Image (tube, rainbow, N blue to C red; front, side, top):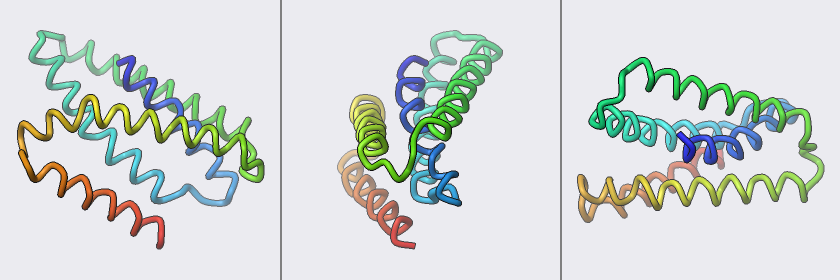
Length: 135
């Protein structure tokens, strides 16, 4: 839960200001959703295997969603998209947090399942995110 919150706060904080620019950034939203979905599934299955009650898991994810929502609202109110430094620092932190979570949690688990295809699939996902950014 702590990892998801630490990952979700900067992501959401950066997502909030895109509303000020007139539209939510599709590549950013897709990247956040696509990275958090397998992360949540992997975490939830691990908690289920550890004997956590489903209600407790749902409450945990509800808390993560609420913290992310508050963080997006704070980013909307605090960050000015015209201010390059503040936005760049928040985006750098969000990117670093996302990369750390992927490297520590998802890649080892993906390698166990996919083996050598893990790298190819990672590059394909990155290419798709660049394509979304170009649209």
